[in-house]
Length: 401
Length: 66
Image (cartoon, rainbow over all chains, first blue to last red; front, side):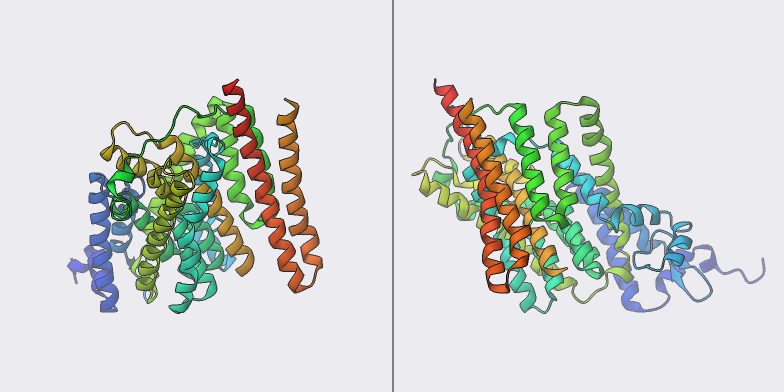
């Protein structure tokens, strides 16, 4: 074996240390971060459905850099920056995840598939149980989506980038993905990763916000469950199709999102078992899995090393924090309007991370008062929040595209 | 029953009038009135949806009471 070099045998190690030391350090950090995501996802600290595939993707892609030719290095996972159709045709036959990226990510299809899944697990009747409080709290919980925009512009982001990062305040992963793909394609990878990272942390962070802003006495308020109307399937379907049509007419650019969400809602209410099982199983979990895996694979050091990442980390946290505060403020206003009969903790459910924030609200209330059930009231703002987030995404995209 | 249908029709008509203001009328107007008409249109659209939702709830509550 003449001229045997051990580094040729283990190319990943050779390529790791070759070139810019900053990139090498970034790769090592991202591999460690990927392993941490897998560990925290498996442990349940972070959302496992997203974080496990994302962590595996992140660690693998940064460890798999190889010489593609004598002078160029890269991976055979994905090339997100390619735009020339001829090159794309070549790359589609080489990079194994490129077909999924090109055909489901860059056109926003994956966000729509996740939205279909969310629709099919959503009962729109909760909005009709308490329409005023649901819609009002959902609007209040968009405070972060609105206020983060001027903050981001003041911090040096362009209008389009600012709008993309502000949508994190809506706490809807697919919505962030959809908006950033349309408005800020260069930054969509870090923005979406920041969004999903923070969204998986809301479960741990919002309980502290609730405890900080709402005194124990108010957290234990019991809601009246006796006067809950029973909404019929026909009414839910009619309401869904009318709302979907009106929203599509108003915001055609967010039409795919509205259609995906409401088709899920209507399929659920139509009780078409085969379609329900298909959408809530293979479609929802399949698209969530590939979403996580693709986000992880997109975290390649060269792609993610952007000077704006730190700004995005700050703004993402700010958006979710302001939205949480806005939601609780909405809860307080409802508390005063109803003269103390409304539990202000429900406000946090307006941040539309379905159904996480509604569950967080119920958990916090049960800690104080075991008799208090607020979930039917919390689901209304939660579902309205999905619609208001899509409306705001539609407004931003319409105004700035 | 007739009253219930009336709310659906009234709510839908209000919403679609709002859509007409936003999509048909507002683009033909000058910049200042364009924004005002569009805002009125958006408000009407959401108010129509709210009318339907509120009426569904009230009708059910009334039925449960009687």
